[in-house]
Image (tube, rainbow, N blue to C red; front, top):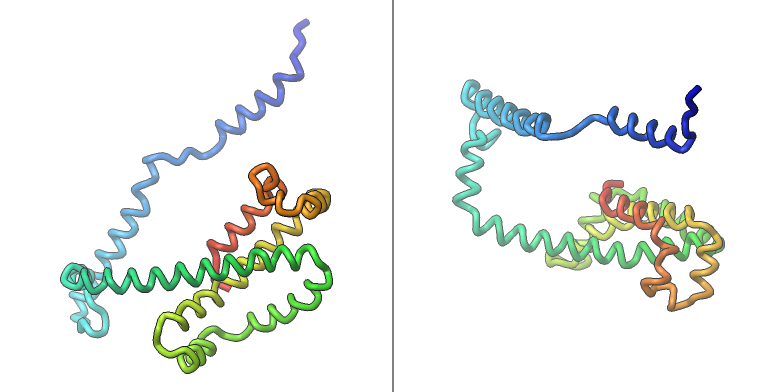
Length: 206
């Protein structure tokens, strides 16, 4: 009578699970490309067959020609817009992550600030944008502030969720370590928070 080693059973089940996982290779990589090409072709055909004016709906070929002709102008504008987005995002991250840590750590601060932050978040951004233009003009400042508002709340909420999911003992050790907590040997307490914070930084769409 043969006996089965119990230690080999989990390994066998894990191997079977791996073999059942769907394999994503070059076999399906072409599907998005084909879908995109079909949409562009349909767009081009509809514009030509229905003779839609360019000022209503330009054909993809006309868009491509304009992109090539106005490359320098579009590139300069993209650099300006990108710098404004980056500044607003960095400003939101620098403020929201420490604030999330403070709110998650101190109950009184959470009760005092979080309801106010939620109420302010309900204000439509489209209503705030004209006020920023009136207050700060047409320069870079109102655009950076608007980007800050768009990014602030999602990063704050997800960072709070990450900090609250930490083990209270880790937070206690971090507090007792003081500045040492931010050294490489002390950042292990914040590693579980990183996925939540990064998720908030990828979805500033509240």
